[in-house]
Structure formats: C-alpha cells, structure tokens
Image (spheres, helix red, strand yellow):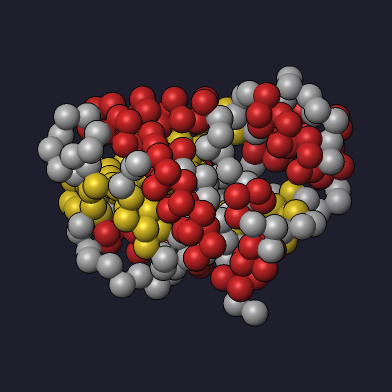
Amino acid sequence: MDEREIWEETHGKFGYSKKVFSLLDSSLVINKFTQELMPFQNKAEMKVLIPGCGSNVNLQLCCNKVLGNNTSIYALDWSKEAIDISKRKTDILGIEVKYINQSYYDLSLNPSFYDIIIMSNAIVSESHENNVTALKNLTNLLKPGGSLLGLFPSPFNMLDYALTNNDAKKWLIDGTVNVKERRIYEKKFGSQRFFSPLELYILFKKINYQVEKFELFFYDDDNFANQIASLYNLKYNSNFCFWGYFINSKKM
Ligand SMILES: C[S@@+](CC[C@H](N)C(=O)[O-])C[C@H]1O[C@@H](n2cnc3c(N)ncnc32)[C@H](O)[C@@H]1O
C-alpha cells in the first residue's frame, strides 16, 4: 500500500469529517489566521491556495471573510472523500471554492499562480523526503513575492509536553516521542516525521523563501486539551498544551 492508500484506509473508513485531526475548530487558530491575513485585505483579485485542506472548511471560511469575494480560493487534498465533504459544506455556506483532488507530491498545476498559500498542519508524512518534496512543490505554485502562511507541527512539542506533564512522561519511554528521529508514533495512525525548527528554517531558505516570522504557537484552549486527552488516553488537563510553529514567509 502506498502512503495515500494507508491514509485513506486509516482516516477514510471513519469519514473525514470525524477522524482527521484538525486545528481549525479552535477560535485561537482561526483568530491567528485572521490576523495574519489582514494585511492582504483590499488587495485586488488574489488567488489563495489551501493545501491539505481536509474536511474542515473553517480556513476557507476565514479566507473568504477576511479577503472577500474578489479573492479566489482554491483548496487541495489527495483525499476525494475529504474534498467531497468540504465541497458540500462550502456550497451550503455559499462560498465559492475551487477544489483540487491532487497529491502535493505530484502536482499538475500552473507554476507561479497563487498569491498566498495558507496551510494548517498539512504536511504530515512519515517520510522526511516526502515532507521536503511537498514544501518544494508548493513553492513552485506561488508567485514571486507571494506569501506562505502556515502552522507546522513540531517533533518537540510532545517532548516538551512529556517533560512538563507527569501523566505524559511515559511517551519518553514507550516510543511515542522519538527525539533522535524527530518522529512521533501514534498507535492508530502510525508515525509522522516532523521538522525541527532549524531544519525547517534552513529548508525555507534553500527553497528561496524569506522567513518573516517563525513563532511558537501554543494551542492553549479547552478544545485542544480535550482532543489531547482523548487522542492519547490522558487525563484531561487544561494546564498543559501542545505547541507548533507559525511561519509567515515570502517567496523571493
Ligand atoms: C492533519 S490533516 C489537516 C487537515 C486540515 N488542514 C485541518 O487542519 O483541518 C492533513 C491533511 O493533509 C492531506 N494530505 C496528506 N498528504 C497529502 C498529499 N500528499 N497531498 C495532498 N493532501 C495530503 C490529508 O488528506 C489531510 O486531509
């Protein structure tokens, strides 16, 4: 089975609307994207791409609210089911979105076409090479001067969580967190290889982006505390939270 089939099997059988881990039900996250999109308000006829859009349409909604109907929104995912669910939702909301059912490992789209790429937790392969390819391929789609805004997972957020919260200490010995490999294992979903901050920063420079912001973003709300508790079988505890990277960058 290739990566796409494995992904479809693990997530697809439950329906994308229920099982894909999404950051987009949190107002904390949506407020961050809203704030980062504000400088692009009132710019004429922009094209925005949301890669790895999944089945949660809150990012499409956020782009439409902030940027208005003059902006064309494109959303891409390799899962046909995720795309179908998203399309139904945005049709009901009356938001025009052009959906693209393709893998970002193998794109047949026009280069230098989009003004903004905006993404949330969208590059999540267990293969580092695939993650690098994804980012490189997405770069080709942006116009020079275009912006890539996004939340990226870190292999060190769960390390930090395990070091801080006694209930999660077991992750350090049961293999859930593998710092050396920068890999996170989940029983249900297999493993994911995330970028360390420096690794990601260097990659951005290599693929010709100027990194304007590279921030830690703390997922500090009840929604995430509940998701963490149920996903990792931990006691609910709102004192601790995960974090990821927020990156705002420009293609040179
Ligand atoms: C963790 S989910 C996040 C979904 C959405 N961004 C959100 O936050 O709700 C990752 C998404 O990326 C998609 N994805 C993974 N690999 C992909 C690939 N190679 N090409 C296109 N989409 C991919 C998955 O199908 C899934 O919908």
